[in-house]
Length: 110
Image 1 (cartoon, rainbow, N blue to C red):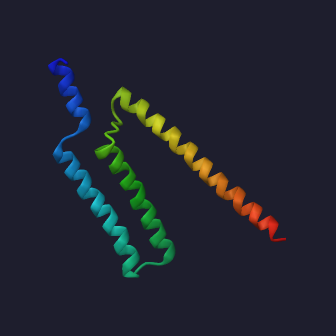
Image 2: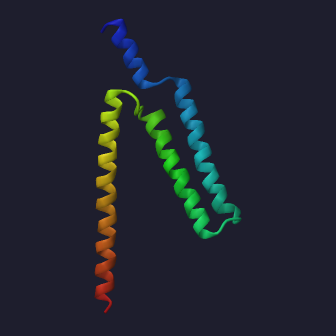
Image 3: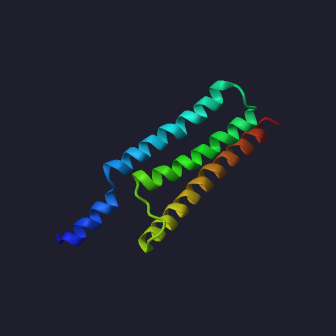
């Protein structure tokens, strides 16, 4: 393995500092929604919206710091599109399954 490819491989895997930054951000992004729920200062809809926002941000943190998904390079764009397509399929599969099950349940209650 040449020195240039070794350096490129090291960049792909991150450093201890990047893992610690990702871990700290993950802890913060978990503690804030926990506080939102436990404090009782927010309505149910505001708490749900806050939790969803922090969940999306935490997904992005995990993609960047732990899965090393780079959004700027050419291979990063391909990985991003692959991830987005996979996420869309999962959301459609789970969402439509829930819709079918709840509709079937409602029709069976008649």
